[in-house]
Image (cartoon, rainbow, N blue to C red; front, top):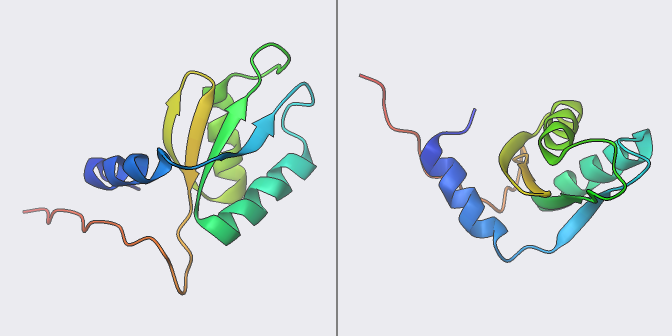
Length: 103
């Protein structure tokens, strides 16, 4: 689970990212989930877009379903775009800010 500071940090990194995942009229196919999983493995942080004119699913639903299928966190959903994050076990390029200690 991401903290608000970690989420804000990831949002700042996602601003300059290109959209690598497009959800269209086919909806969430196994091929799309595989593509998202491969992209998360390579990049850790990805941006996706739902083509609202043709897609049968909303951006929020698509982000949550892809996130659960790929074991990733939904960082944000704005309009038709969404950002997902899954940290690598080894050699992670993204260092998240530490969570505040609970007292």
